[in-house]
Image (cartoon, rainbow, N blue to C red; front, top):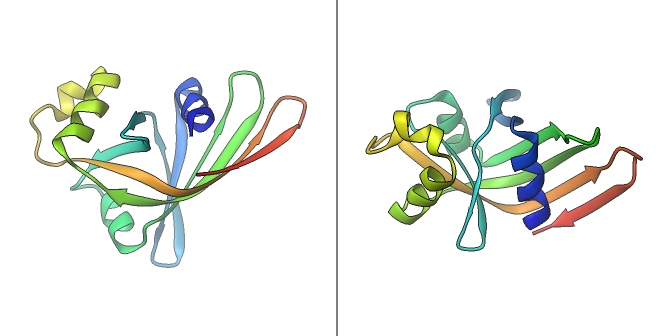
Length: 130
């Protein structure tokens, strides 16, 4: 998990895909944290992405790494908007506080059953599961 977390943090922007009916939908995300041994992302519960995850928990993420490599992962997103996970997300990503501090629509989700493919600048590939 730590390797994937480090890649997400270093990429600054990663592309987060969900399923809408039978069509993929992708958008940029940038906030991630670790909490309780899990990898978390966040969104607003009023957004379409949240409804899409509610209908189909399968997600995918892809990004470039600063050294010219890339990574992608697939996972299941699980809602966990506990006060502790929200606090962890806001503490690590203070730019979110202006939008979400005290906002009841702020939602945190952890990723489970993660399968990651990582390719470095030399095209050396690593596969991780957690």
